[in-house]
Length: 460
Ligand SMILES: [Zn+2]
Image (cartoon, rainbow, N blue to C red; front, side):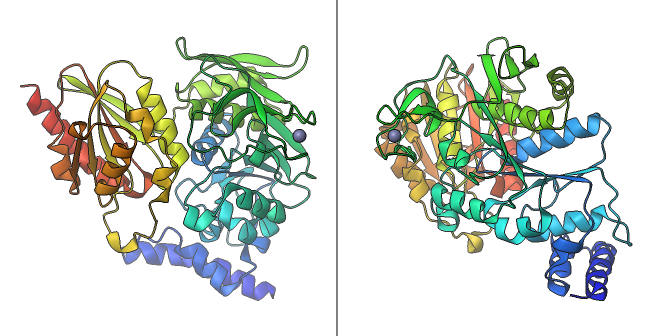
């Protein structure tokens, strides 16, 4: 690769942006794609900020990246991120193109890059992050990702040896990644809602990694997340370096602390009472401690951020409360967590299931096996009095709900999302939950507007 080739790629990519704007194209990945086409080693040579933090894992990487960006920016650092681009090689390249001058000098102190697990091999050899935050590894989009143990091996093969991991000790699959790399473990001590036997359909880590005996749990949160040990050989899950404890969802507080006597600690205000976001806070705090910020500082900054509005949102509509509940599609765990959360909320509930609603069915490529890994059983309770299944997979949802034991008379099935909204009953005093995924945000917002109108009318 010549220097000329690299600069040709950089300048072409930079020039493509105004050209795209002029021609009205919305090519968020295009500059990076172009750069990689002209110079396949582009990521190696493009100027990078002094420090790079990569964030990966099945669930929580967007929220953790956003939290890190917000806190670092509030602390006065100039942060480069791919918040508005994609998390694959072309998206990362686009962000880095935007982050350098025409002479390839970085304009930022630190980069926080959300990186898709499957893109590891195209990114880490060139980017070499100082820190890699690994949130968790679960079954996700299985046609693409196969099994979480496969993804763990894939990451191990891709992560540069000098990168320090900040990794979830409560997830034995994630914590097995890159075993020879330097690392910091985070986790959450026993919570009031923990169990010791798995209540979910899927637990992908039941076997001791040392002796293949059956793992037991001091506490188990969901699926394979918890504090595991092996009674046969004495194997134990890693100890925490940074830990969440005394989680109190009633008063919305938690202590995050460095473990050990007299370690730095602080009481944080919970940004959300969902366990995913509680983990996301501990994850972000563990990384920020590595950068030398105190827990008091981190807690102060975090308090001023908010979990992104698209993830969770409640509003009063007529006589009901409308809750927008994001549940990543093709991901049994995300939907299971969301169903579990909703089932534990007080009061009567009506659900509109519209995960996997793509406006463009031509690009539909996922099979539906994840529905059978997902705990729809949480919805088979009397306070969930009505469920409307909608979108191209409406009938699949209906079948799965029936198998989960939801009585047929509680289920309505309507492929058209707007017609489905009309089937909602808006029972006064109840909550209406709209479940939607990241692939259909624009559609979800349009349907929400219709639901709001219908909800207001129903109250007249
Ligand atoms: Zn063992």
